[in-house]
Amino acid sequence: MSLEYTHQPDYFFFAQLLVHHVEGYIEKHPDAQNAIFDLRDIYELFRQDFASATTNLDAILHIADEYKVETLNGDQKLISHYAIDPKNNSLLLDFNADALENLKQGKKLIEPDPTSHE
Image (cartoon, rainbow, N blue to C red; front, side, top):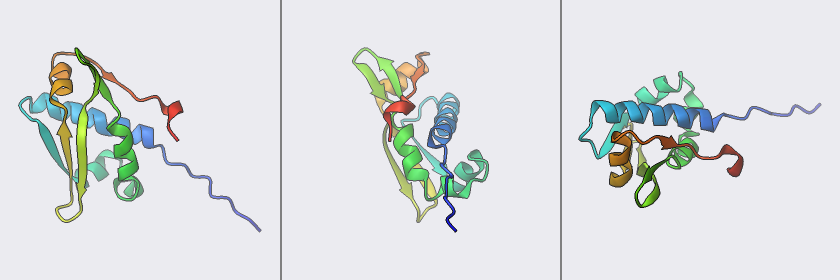
């Protein structure tokens, strides 16, 4: 007997949830150039999907850091760097200053194309 495991996590959905959470953070903290999120908050944001908040988080962040904002210098990524700090149970995000400023000025996020990712 053969059982195929066909569950495929929806990384793009979780990436979009995370990026919208980041947008809310930026609205509440307009002077922030980076953000630190507790991984327990990410777990709650992902509706207690443990795999997405742990094992799959790096893949989700890889998609989330592809979100861009239109600037005078072309489309630029909003997240310039991310790091998962397991010791402190936190997620660290650094923002691209130019993209961040344009987002604050009302420019919309440009979502990555899910058909072009593996």
